[in-house]
Length: 138
Image (tube, rainbow, N blue to C red):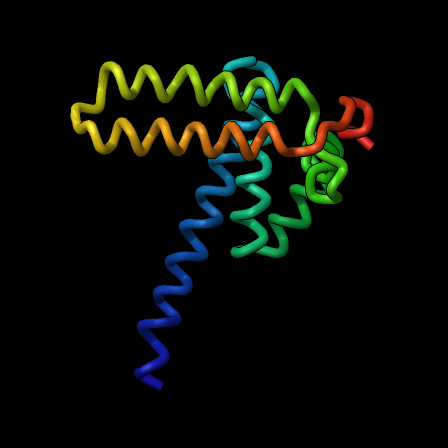
C-alpha cells in the first residue's frame, strides 16, 4: 500500500494542476469574448483538454455550457473553427513571439526555438477546417 501512495499523490497533484489550468483558461477565454486580443476558442480548447484529463464534471459543464460549449463543440466534432478565431490565434502568435524574441530573450537557440514553435502552431492552425460563426454556435 505504501508503494501506491507517492503515485496517488502525484496523480492528485497533476489533477489539481490541470483543473487549475482549465479554470484559468476558461476565465481568460471569457475575458477574451470582450477583449479582442485574447483568443477565446484556443483558450477554451485548452480548458477542455485539461478538464478531459482531470475532471469529468468540469468537462461536461464546459461542453454543455450554453455560450461556451458551442464554440468548442464544432472543433471537437471535426467541423472546424471560425475564421475569426483562427486569425486571432495566428495574429497573437506573431505579435507575442517576435516581441519576446526581440526584447526579452537573449539566447539565440531559444529565439530559434520560439520562432519554430510559432511557425509550427501557425501551420497547424492554417490546416484546421473552417466553420462559420453560426455553425460554431450550433
